[in-house]
Each structure stands twice: as structure tokens, then as C-alpha cells.
Image (cartoon, rainbow, N blue to C red; front, side, top):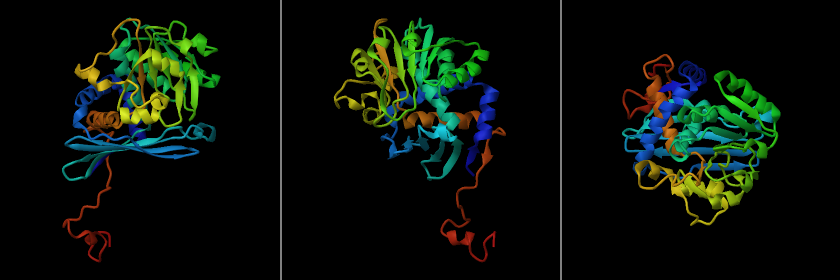
Length: 342
């Protein structure tokens, strides 16, 4: 039977192992899969857009394993008592098509997104980076902070959010873990002295939360919040000054910060940096920008990682989801007069 890691067991696993160590080990899976990027089936995610938000399916497969993630993004949900993002995912055997593993992916997506940001920053940010700025203190913010600390050791954070309660929430969660947090009263104050800037806002609109003057030479920028058509965060002039790195260009050109740029606007696929086919940061003065929208291969990596990390433990349970009669040609035997449940 397929195995399942549900929400309570996902939370238990994260509490048991710690966000930082999990992200560190997940980065290993991400780097391994990104290096074999060309071996995957790839397609932009299938999205259903409404005035309320978006619901998406994110599939991919290699020669052995198929995966997909179901995920929504509804920016107005918190005001109604719901999460902005919820998700679950599945692995299946390519050999017979049977599902083998299911997992909640609301928590896992937060880990995956932060791990991807940290993986990219590990290879693109200046090695002497010591200060991080967060624009947006929502559900992703703690995970992003812990991920960057895990790979670059940064504990000095400057944070700005239009909602002061969100900043206080972040302070309450991260200061006991050793972070030094400055609650900025403006974006201008927040970005002062920043080496890494992470933008992660939720509003489904073409906003400009970061202006051109906010980004000084040498900064690495993780643009996390722009992840669907009609949703951006950056002044377009920042893009023109930056070296831009993306996951899967056909998807990023639909959803990312570059969605308003021409089809031939130059970008670098990040996997090529890992394989050595492309150069990452070229100088200390260069601005590197990761136009992050989230791609299915990262979910594939995260699902494989949590499956392997929890295998053989009480964190996994069986889920009876596949009708599997003794005679593969006699499906009716499961419901007929001689069925086990009759």
C-alpha cells in the first residue's frame, strides 16, 4: 500500500529534526536533481485562475518516478481564517503507475521553497554576506530566514511588512533561536546595508514593493512572491541591472518577475550553474537575482527526501487508496456478492 505522511506527523518530524538540519539535507536532494535536470519531463504548471486565487497542479517525472503537487494560492484567505497556501503531493512508480507515497505539502512546500532559495544563495550570494532583509513577514519568512542561516550563517535580519503584527510574529518565533532582528519602519530602512534581500509578499497584483534605489551593487536578491500571472514585486529597472537566474524559463516567463519582459529577455537556468555549463556570480559588484516561482522538480526532490527520511518510522502510515483485486481483470469482485465486504 502507499505510505502517507500527514500533517501531525510532518509537524512531529520537523520538530524532531529541526528546520535548519532538514533544509540542509533537502538541499542535497535538490542539487542532485537539478544537476540531472535534462532527465526530467518538464511542463509549466497547470493553473486554474479565479478572482479569489489560483489552484495549480505541478507534475514531473524521471525514468522511474512520477510526482505531482496540488497547491492553491489565495491571498485573501488569512482575513477569512484560512491559509494562503495549502498543498499535498504524491509519488508514483513509472513502471506500473501505482502511487507509492503521499504527503501533506503545506509545511513541506515552505521547507522546499526556503531550501531552494538557500541553495541558490549558496552559489550566487557573495561569500562574505552578513545581513539579510526580508520584505514580507508572512508564512514563508521564518523558513526563509532559517534556510539562509543554515547555508550562510546569517543571523542579522532587518524586516519590513505593512502589517506590524506579522513582524512581531516573526520576532517572537526567531529571536529565541538566536536571530538579531530589526523591525524596520520602511523599505528604505530595511534594505540599508543588506547583502541578501528576500521579497515574499502575497498580494496577487503587479506591485512594486522594491524600488530600483533599494538594491545596491553586490546584493543577491531572492524574489519569491511573484509566482503567477499578474503578480510581481520588483521595479522593472532592477531586472535590467541584474543577472537573472530562473528555474524553468517557459514557466517563469508566464509567472515570474520577467513576465512583462520580451520572450528573448536574457536569463540563466540555474541548473546550468550547478553543472558548470554557466557561470554564477562574476564579481562582488554584480547584482544576482533569483526569479523564483517554484517548479515541479523541486517538489519531486522534497517528496523523495521526506519519504526517505521518514521511511521505517512511525511517521509514515499506510493509506488504502488503490483498488487491487486478486484477479487484475476482475474489478467487480471487490463489490459483487462474493466480495470481502459483502
